[in-house]
Length: 156
Length: 156
DNA sequence: AATGAAAGAGTTGTTTC
DNA sequence: GAAACAACTCTTTCATT
Image 1 (cartoon, each protein chain N blue to C red):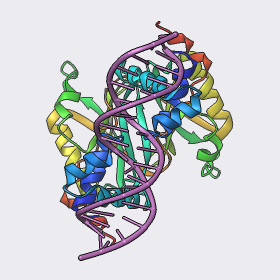
Image 2: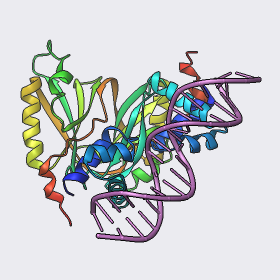
Image 3: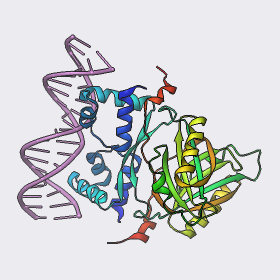
Image 4: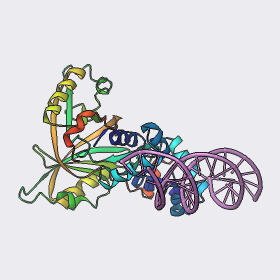
């Protein structure tokens, strides 16, 4: 990925609704050229989608937590993400190295909703859980800084 | 927040670039009515912004990790987020309950970049670190499901 | 790949209810 | 608050280079 594409990606990471007209002005390209590049970045999967960033306190999900899970039966762990996917309180699921198998990020309305969710997680995936409650979030979703160093993944 | 606003928020969480015309069609409101609601949701901070969701493998930051940090001097811990904010590899910083003070989510280009980053974190915030490397991410940034239960935060 | 032009959509402010 | 309208701007496609 070269310079102008990195610029476009950085701009869209900071403002997912930026217009093609503004992207064109910021990159020095014509509107149709940026348009073409953005569509190509989407098609190649570099840009996976667009999302509104929400204030979870305001939408009734003020409690965030990280839930680390460990399978009860170490042989049958690989399908945990699938078994948990129906639980919409789970925002993210990462497979990790270390003592535990996965780290989940969850958003719930209350401590009792968290209790209920943990029970559902344990049953659905046959795992034990270790929960770390988030007290506050100084920052989140900061856009990446894409410098020239990203020549490491150059594919074309 | 009532029904239609929840609907709008859910739609924008899934597709941050959805047009007002489409939002109007999905909610049954006129275009100007949804427009007004979206602007109000933005102004009240319910919608904090918009972002492109990226494929970090493709943009040269294929290594994600969670870094838990613990202050060396337990008295001087509160300013760690400020002291770390200049490190752009840190995507998020959460203050947490538990043995450690903060959990950082970081994105880097390589193991050696992670090593370098951890050193910078330790120096900048005077903390010890514990790092959990992400092997893969089955899912991330799933939009929340906002049901009627969110009457808990009703403010108006 | 990039450009410019043209047609179709979408955005946004004003007015009215 | 919401709708209707009008003026304006942006998006999208296409022919051209």
